[in-house]
Image 1 (cartoon, rainbow, N blue to C red):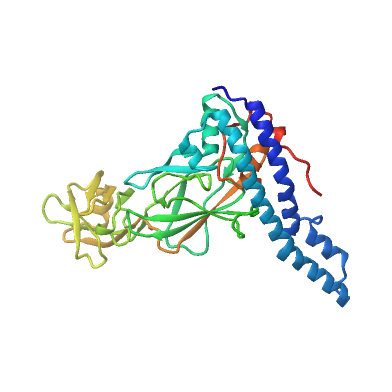
Image 2: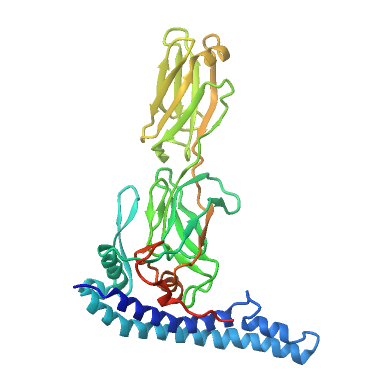
Length: 399
């Protein structure tokens, strides 16, 4: 069945314009960020030096917040329900919607989660999921929003160090900050809760603008999330070295780190000069008292370098380049040793928090109203040069 996209988006645009009127009234009664908004109008119209005027202003603002705003929220909810009751059957006729998509309502996400913690969206079900799939099949797009995720920043004082390696957002990833917080600090299985805190909350949503991701983010694994519209991956920062005053080691990495053979991600290295060949003994311990030996490697000679790779009992791999020349300078004879060298992946700990700023130009009328006016955590197929007329969902601004 061929979808009449012109008719579909004309109807959807009209419904969005109608509901936008209620949303706009809610914005004006609830917020104070614009001088033309209701609370600001009262602020500028009454004098706080006159008791009766001050009382009138205060009571007027309270009435807006306690009566008008909730009434508009309730009205908006009823309008969205009415829209779904009326428009979804019309859309079903166009799409020949499956019973699975009908049962899923507007949008639902089915995920694939691997054993290592990678999360990807397997399927988008519901009417919007069905419409998106058909649009992709038919090479149809609405005007996209330009979404950008910025640099990772700490919140407060953290123990762990992270780097952001993947950060993208779909059209419905609205402006605000993505918040990450460590909920499991087990080395090798560190996970984070993920929230999108909107700069401007949406009508009918959480009053603080919080949108929770469907899944946890696992360190070193990509997470694609439908509800926030974000795709993220965070990795550990650089390995932190201490005590290697003789510069024995360079280009050090610690991979596949585990709790069982590290001290919360820290390992301890002892280098000893032996009387007979091989003259260098490199020992890897998992505790500061150097009692739990995880592995060793030997090397011979007093010039050049050698690659070192030692695997601990739980699978942690310590790899580095060992300078025999520097070791010979610092430890010229047996039984010289250096036993205070440490390498730390600086694993995040419970309570560590980060934020990622999200910008969204909200340039697409359909894309933006779908997320903000209707409150759906979904994006349709979109592009910078869309096939569908974006102005069908445009609405006059309120002043």
